Amino acid sequence: MRILVPVKRVVDYNVNVRVKADGSGVELTNVKMSMNPFDEVSVEAALRLKEAGKASEIVVVSIGPAKAEDTLRTALAMGADRAILVETDDTIEPLAVAKILKSVAEAEKPDLVLTGKQAIDDDSNQTGQMLSALLGWPQGTFASDIEIADGSAVVVREVDGGSRTIRIALPAVVTTDLRLNEPRYPSLPNIMKAKKKPLERRTPGDFGVTTEPRLIVMKTEEPSGRKAGVIVASAQELVQRLSAETGTI
Amino acid sequence: MAILLVVDHDNTSLSEQTAKALTAASLIGDEAGTEIHLLVAGEGVTAIAERAARLAGASKVLVADDPRYTDGLAEPLAALVVSLADGYDTIVAAATSSGKDVMPRVAALLDVSQISEITEVLDRVTFKRPVYAGNAVQTVRSTDAKRAITVRTSAFAVASEGPQVPIVPATTGQHQYPASSLVSEQLAKSERPDLTSAKVVVAGGRALGSAEKFNATIIPLADRLGAAVGASRAAVDAGYAPNDWQVGQTGKIVAPDLYIACGISGAIQHLAGMKDSKVIVAINQDSEAPIFQVADYGLVGDLFELLPELETALASRSATKS
Ligand SMILES: Cc1cc2nc3c(=O)[nH]c(=O)nc-3n(C[C@H](O)[C@H](O)[C@H](O)COP(=O)(O)OP(=O)(O)OC[C@H]3O[C@@H](n4cnc5c(N)ncnc54)[C@H](O)[C@@H]3O)c2cc1C
Ligand SMILES: Cc1cc2nc3c(=O)[nH]c(=O)nc-3n(C[C@H](O)[C@H](O)[C@H](O)COP(=O)(O)OP(=O)(O)OC[C@H]3O[C@@H](n4cnc5c(N)ncnc54)[C@H](O)[C@@H]3O)c2cc1C
Image 1 (cartoon, protein in one colour):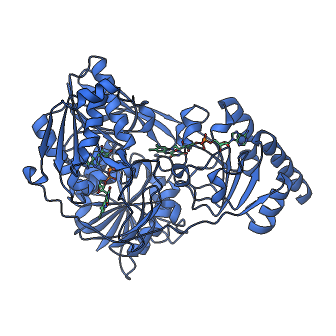
Image 2 (cartoon, chains in turn yellow, red):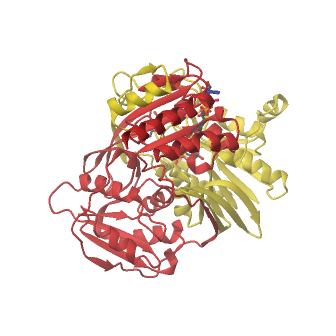
C-alpha cells in the first residue's frame, strides 16, 4: 500500500502573527516557518502504518515556494520515502491545491491520502474533503484513530458531541486531528539521510491547473482587541461585581 | 437567486447552530424577495422540518426523507446538495463538524471556492473571516458564480420564531457517490447546555491535574451556574475531559455571555476559541499568565481553594435572592 501525505509550510504555531500596518496581509518576513502541525500528525500516522507492515511506501508532497523543500526534508527525515515539490510563489486556494493533489494522486496511485484537518494559517479545513470529492473517493475527516484492514479503513472521527466510527473503502482520503498521535522528532542521522532522499520538482502548470484565486482578499485587519480588566481580591467580590456590573449571573 | 441552507440535526432535533446560520443567510439575502430554502435530509425528520419551518427568515423547507441520509455521511449528502444547486447562487451551512465535513465536498463538486467560517456579511459576495487563529481578520470577495459558505455561528444571533412556511419534498434522484458506512457512534448524552450555545461556560485546563479533580472542581461550579463545560487542549489530551469539550482553534469556537477560565494559561490557540465571549473571568495562580490580558475580571490564586469559595459565594447569593 502506498500513502500520499500532503504537507504544508506554515507560520510556526508559536509565532504571534501580526497584521501589516497597510492592511495588505500578515507580516511573514523573517518569521519562523514550520510544517503544519496536523501534517506532522499525518506523516507520523503514515510511518506507523508502514512500521506495522500495512504500508510499503510513503510519498510526501508540498505545494508552495522553493522553501517548502525544508518542510519536505523534515518529512523525509521523519521517515517518508520520497518527496514531490510543486513549486509556485502564488497564493493557492484549497480548491487549486486539491486539483493539483488530484493529479498527483492519479499519477502516484496511492491507496490512502492523509491530509491535515486544517492548516493553522488559513484555517480553511477544506483541502482533504475537496480532494476526496474530486477523486470520487470516500472521506474520513477529523480522524483520531485509523485502522486499515481488508481494503478498507475504519476511522474514528471527532465530531460535535463525541465521536463517530465509519468504514470507508480504499482508496480514500483521511484528514487527521491532533489526537491521532504524538509525532516523532527526526534524529540527526535521519536528517542527514533525508538530504539524499529523492525529491522531484514540478509546477502547477505541469498538471494543467491554474492557480488564479477565486477569492479576492480586500483587506486584512487586526481583530477587535480586548483590554485587560481588573484583578479582584476574592471570590465574594467576583460574584458581587459580575452580578452588579455585567448581569451575567 | 435563492439561498440554500443545509440544516444540521441529529435525526431528533434541529441544531441551534442552524438557527444562527439562518441569521447569516438572511443578511446575505438582503435584497427583498430573496428566498431562503432550508434543506432537511435524513430519515423520519418530520419534526425537524416542522421546527425549521417556523424559523424567521425561511421561505420554504425542503425535506429529503431517505435512508441514504440517515447516518449523516458526507458523500450522499454532498451529492444531494449538488443535485439541487442549480436554483441557488449561495449555499450555506453552519460550521459544525457536519457542515465542515460536507460543504468543501459540495464546493469542489461545483468547482467553486469555499468561504470558511464567515463572521460578518458585508454584501452578497463579500465577507469577513478570521485567519491565523483569529489573529487577523480577512475581508474576502468571491468571484465565483456560486458561493459555498460555512458560518461561524458564535458571531450570529439565533433566528427568532416566524410564521410557518411550506414544507415540500426535495427532489432526490439517483446520485453517484463513493460508499461509506457508519459503524458506531459514541455521543455523550448530557443534560448540560451545549457548549456552543450556552450562556455561561466554565472551562478547566491542565492545572486540574486529573479527571477526578476536574469532575470534583469544575462540574459543581458549572452545575451551580447552569453552565456548559469547556476544556483546554492540554486538559483534553491528558484525559481530564472528553474531546468535544475542547475550546480553541482546533476545538469549538464559543462566545457565551460569561466564560470562566480556570487554570488555563491563555495560549493563542485557546484564546482563538473564546476571546469573543462577552465577559471573561480568569482564575489562575500565575498573575503573569496571558489569559489575564483578555480577562475582564481576574482572580489570582489556587483554583482548588478559589472555586469552592466561588461556589459558596454563589450559593449564599441565590439564598438571599430567593
Ligand atoms: C487570497 C489568499 C491569500 C493568502 N495569503 C497567504 C499568505 O500570504 N501566506 C500563507 O502562508 N498563506 C496564505 N493564504 C493561505 C493559503 O493559500 C492557504 O493555505 C490555502 O488556501 C490552503 O488553505 P489551508 O491551508 O487553510 O487548507 P486546509 O484545507 O486547512 O489544509 C488542510 C490540509 O491540506 C493540505 N494542504 C493544504 N495546502 C497545501 C499545500 N500547499 N501543499 C501541500 N498540502 C497542502 C495539508 O495536508 C493540510 O493539512 C492565502 C489564502 C488566500 C485565499
Ligand atoms: C496546532 C495546535 C492547535 C492547538 N489547538 C488548541 C485548542 O484548540 N485549544 C487549546 O486549548 N489549546 C490548543 N493548543 C494547545 C495550546 O498551545 C496550549 O498548549 C494549551 O492551550 C495549554 O493548555 P492549558 O492552558 O490548560 O495548560 P498550561 O499552559 O500548562 O496552563 C496551565 C495554567 O494553570 C495555572 N495553574 C496551575 N496550577 C494552578 C492552580 N492550582 N490554581 C490556579 N492556576 C493554576 C498555571 O499558572 C498555568 O497558567 C493547540 C496547539 C497547537 C500546536
